[in-house]
Image (cartoon, rainbow over the protein chains, first blue to last red):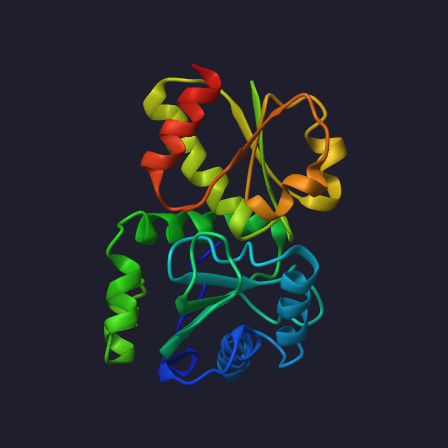
Length: 148
Length: 90
């Protein structure tokens, strides 16, 4: 499958969020803005965390906000939110979170190519800090390896 | 050998763990099938697994199992994965 899209409309830098729910909602709204999810996807993402805990904070400072493929997902895409002030998710090791990566995936059997791409980017331990410090959407797209 | 990665949705985080575990296992020259699954299917998928890789949040829900349950803190830190897989399999 082609890499999930990350258009400028799905990137919000220096956003303000009062808590993790607000931060996750921003990531879902950005996916909706770029046309790959319905706004109701936010509720699905939040429900996953309420049900299973803050495991989506998969690395220091980074939350991978996502839910299952379903009727809320319209296409394969990513969003990137950076926060002016980091928020806590209640994670035992990786709080506070400054970068939220929203992920919408249409089909579970096809998602491994997309996450292999994410592993390539984030196995470089500077990527999260680079995203947090980014000042333009183009810079984010460059870090995320997305050609526009 | 069978290794299962577990997350809430069975996509996304468990997929990242699968991809990175496969990379580490290749470097360690260990042959294994690595399967990403959601917590709801852990009983079926992990019944014959040697190792389960997951986050701290899922340990309780995984419950009693014959597999080694390994908690990964940073999914992108292949050094952490290497050390923990080597300790479990070595």
